[in-house]
Image (cartoon, rainbow, N blue to C red; front, top):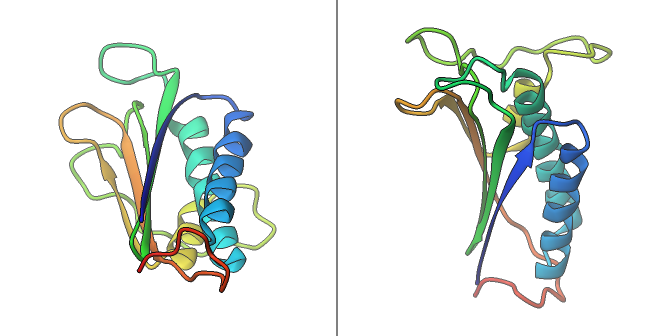
Length: 151
């Protein structure tokens, strides 16, 4: 079983719950365990919020008004990628390592949460085009009655 979808979203706060609801609906329909779905939806929300806030207007070629979310449910794994067209991580140095912050903090916890909720995380810049990419994978668990469970 394989499901793939991609969204091109405006850099507006209202786009974050839209992406999250689509992911949750897809996973519920496929029969993914609700705890796994919830973890991935939180990670996706954090990645989208970062794209909305930091996907900036300084992209190569002008204004950056959108970002892209792509999700793949393939076999036993879900992979999610969020890419923006902003300035990316400045310079040629690697993306910042996720850092634990205060639980009450309003900012700075997104990358750490993604790292904690996913099995594998890649944070970096889009090659040659400007913009940041956050991708993460998680091994799926299935409900016993899953209609689309991988075999």
